[in-house]
Every structure is written in C-alpha cells, then in structure tokens.
Image (tube, rainbow, N blue to C red; front, side):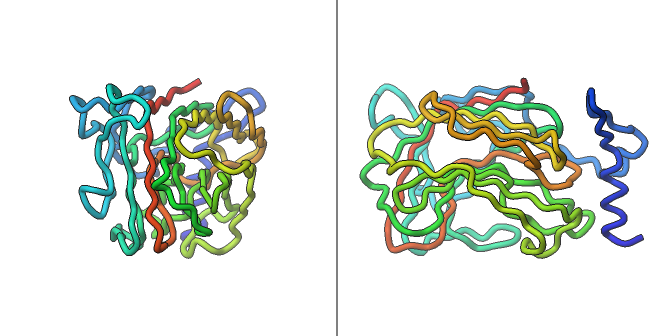
Length: 267
C-alpha cells in the first residue's frame, strides 16, 4: 500500500454528513495511539505558583528569551515575556530557527468548534523589521507513522513590519513530505500599524476541518476582523496545537513581547 493510499484509508475514519461528523471506530483504530496531555478547557494567567505550566512545553534558546515577568502596565500582575536577539536559534526535530515559544500539548478535535482567547503586548523593545515574526500559531500534528514532515501552521498571527497579518494554510495533499507541494495560502487580515505599549485582546473561533465545514472567526479588541469559511486543517490523525511567543526570520533587531490570560474551550 502506498503512503497516499494509507493516508486516505486513515481519513475514511471521519464520515461527514449534513447533520454531523461520525467516526468509524474500526477505521479510527488505524491511527496510532498517542498521548497528548491537556483538558478540553483551560484558563491560564501565568501565576508563578503554577510555573512551569502543566501540559505545556518550552522552546527557548536561553533563560532570558522566555520567563515570567511583571505586567508592563500592572506590577501586581504576572505575565510571560518573550525576547529574541540576533542569532538566537533553537534546534528542534526538523529545523534550527530563531524562536522563543510556549506550546500546548493538547490537540484540538476536528469538526468541532473551539474558541481561544489571549492578550499580547508589544513594548518599545519590539523593534519593527521587514521579516516574518509569528506571535501565535496553530500547528498541525504530522502523521509520523507515514513519514510525514511538519508543515507550516494552519493558522498564524504574523507581525510583519508594523502590521499584524492573519494567515491560513491548508493542502489537498493527504501525505506531505516537503512542505511545499500544493500548499494553499491566504492572508485573511492585514491590520493598521500596531500601537506599542498597549494590550491587544484576541479571540479566535475555529472549526478545524479539511472539508467545507471549516471556518475561522477572529476578533481583535472586540471587533471582528476575520470571517472565513473553507478548509482550515490538513488531513491528519490528530488536530492542531497552539503555540505562543516569537518565531521569526533572523534579524539584527531585538523583538520583545508579553502575553497573558490564555483561554481555550470547546463550543
């Protein structure tokens, strides 16, 4: 059996009807069992007593690049601070890139609406540059048993220059091995210039799906800026996971960002 045929067999475990999505338990068992810690809902305020966070992992080149800090606007509040300087990279399973990120081990379900909320803050130390700098991303879970490589995130918040871009990426290819073939990209939103030294409240509602029932809605400061309908995920055994922090192209400039009040819940 070819890898593509094997992947298509795995995908047949999800049967989409007009009323609901049903999984055939016999076919679903072909997806390898994997343990992803996390509850179906969570609320995190980055209290030092709860650090390091249960169910989260840290990807950081050094201790200065990611740590708990006082809120720049409220010394009584604890937040997480991210900083990347030129040349600071971290080697992961697949790449060596500049990054300082927290990522949640929980995997979202397919075909079930889910909501995420969090706040981000860009101080003066965020030195704008014309490079890609992801501050939040929803990353796919590659099917390693099919030798699949990691693909670019299905959904990403990207600060480019002084603007925030919201991007979606999917692919009709079931088994991906190069992160380039038949990728579908779309910029869903491009903001006005970002204001420094203020908190931005972000809410995302999404239905992860490689089919027509997928959708993405995004609100910034309470105003809806994205209302997208279409595919939102790759055809995988397990759904996307959330990452926050800084993942960027290298730059001579220093980037600093704060984040707080992460929430996730099924709708």
